[in-house]
Structures are given as structure tokens and as C-alpha cells.
Amino acid sequence: MSKLFAPLRTAAALAAAALVAGPYLSAQVVPLSIKISQELVAPGGVAQVKVTVTEPKPISTGRGRLSSGFEAIDGIALSGPNGDAYGVAIVNDGEVELSLNSPSGTMGMATDDYPLLTIAGRIPEDAPIGKVMRVSMDPSALTLLDPNGVPYRIDMESGSVTAAPVMSVQDVRPGSALVPAGGRVSVLGDGFTRDMKIRLSHVSVDRTLFISPNRIDFVLDAPTRMHGVNVRAEGKNSNTRMEYFSYQRTRPAVVSLDPVLQHAVPLFPGGGTVDASFDVSGVTTGVAVQNVDEAFVTAFAELSTADGEVLSAQWLLVPQNQYLVQSLAEVFGVDDPRAAVVRVRSLTPLSVMGVAVDADGKASPIIPR
Image 1 (spheres, one colour):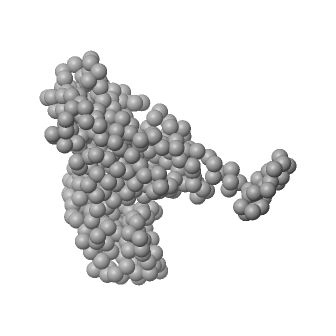
Image 2: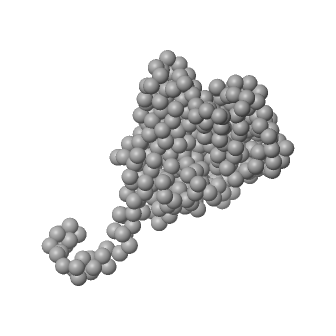
Image 3: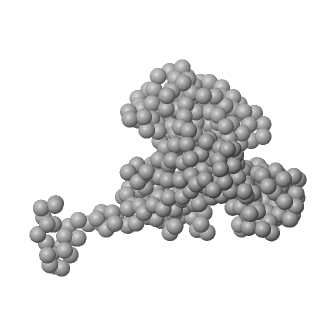
């Protein structure tokens, strides 16, 4: 093709070449602009970095690597307007390798500056005021595909976290649950003042309650699913204003012995299900289950052949606000079969998906059905 295009000089020849190339070349030049936020946080505090698509464009799948100056990463969340954004993050210190998947192809289509991805991380307590820590994504490792599987041309604007004497929002609890009208939600952080108010995008707050410099509660005026809600804490002075996107921050219940899965953080949409299945296709596979309920949940997991023969069945114990990611061998005591189905059932809704690890050690979500 390069020899064919080199001598073309006339407009007619270029038009003919475009017809021969079809839609692929035109799709290849579609730009996708990604912006990483600039955040201020007090030394020892938690900053939530937002990765935003500046103009809505549909994303079906993607992969990328983010580096930061965080001492520790406390939480990661995806968002999508259709509520089907799944992902796997491999976390090593301040480095995060991400794989994303949206079956509806609607990631990146949120409006009102809702982020595609948020990462909450802690900076060192001895960070000097004014210290700037760069947050960036490796362009050579970043691929985002449209619903047709065509890669975007990505324009990237890096972000930063700066140590400063400011108020910080570190967590919202519950972060993903459906909270009824009149229900109370807690905002945790540092530097809160009595004059502060909490405002939510598209949701009415009945009242704000100052509890302490580290906690403010608010009461909802209507039933609200908290996952992905934009929470704004606002005081009278510019150092007491902060934006935070809510999600349930969970921690691992167990640590896998698999060298990849032991660093895996599953990224789920809000909500859950009492019956979920996913396919196993012969690569190294993990089972990821998350419980955002306030009580311990017991689930029943089965590994079956494609025609329904049960190979193994086990009980899974998932504590509140925790997740587990384990290999099939750890869960079921069997090696990865060439083709099988994992089914997880429980009385209380859980988030469930599979994690596939390829020969290069790259992890990807397996979407449940």
C-alpha cells in the first residue's frame, strides 16, 4: 500500500485511494483527547486523580499504564453511562496497568465532565509543601478502541498532585450502595469546617451535618445509587473546596498465590447480582468476587463443562467491603480447562467477573452474563 500511495498527487487519485481504503483510514485519524486532573492535597492525605475524556466518544475496550508519585494507591474506579464498565488493574506501588471493557461501548460517553477513571492515592506525610508529583499515562502502552474495534489517535494531557495546606476528601461511605430517601452518607477526610456544605450533581441533599474536622454527613432528599455520584464539599474559602466521585472502596479478603492475580484489583460497575456466569477459554483464569454489602456473604461457585457437567463446586466466603481474586486452581482445586463455565450464586447481590491472564502476563476482565 505504501508504494501505491507514494506517487499519488492529484485530488482525483486521492479520492480513489480513500474509496479503496474504506472507512478504516478515516476511523484511524479520529482523535480522542484524554486529560488527567491537577490535584492539591495535604501531606499524608489522599488525592483522587480524575482521568477524563474531554469530548464524549464511545470506547469499547482499552489498555493503558499510569504512573504516579503516590506512596500507596487506596482505590480505583471506572465509570460509564450505561453502567457496564468493567476492568482489571494490576497495581505495583504507584504504577497501575489497566484493562477496560464496556460491552455496550459507551465508556467515554458521559457528559458533565464525569471521569472515565478515578484513582485515589496517598502522598507521603513528609512531602514538603509545594512538591509536585507528576501523574501520567505511557502513550506507547495506551490503546483505546471504538465499538468497531478501531483504535483512536490519542492526545494526552498529563496531570499532577501537589502537596498543599488544603482540605481533602478521602472517602465517601457508602460509596456505591442504593441509599434511601432520608438515608445518611458520610464524607471522610481532613480539614473540614462547620460552615461546609455538601452538594451532589443531579441529586438533592436535605441537609449537611458537621461531625468533626475529619467527617461530614449528609442526608439524601431522594433514593440515590451512590456509585459515580459527584460529591462537592464547599466551604467559604478556596482551600475548603473539593470534588470527589463516589464509589465503594474495598480491600482484598485474601491474596492469590498467582504472580499476576496477587496484584489484581477488579473494577466493577455499581450494583450486583445473585447469579452470574462467565466463560473460561483455556488461558490462565481468575475468579473475581466483590461484596459491598454491610454483612458477610456466602456464595456458591461451580465450575462446569460447556454442556453442564459439574467439575467442581465450592463455597466462597466474602467479608463486607472486600473482594477476592483467585485462580481456578485456588478456588476449585483444578487446572485451567480448555473450555468451561464458572457460575457464582448467592442470596445477597455480589459483583462477579472473570480475569483472563495471557501468555505475556496481561490481565483482562471476562464479562459475566
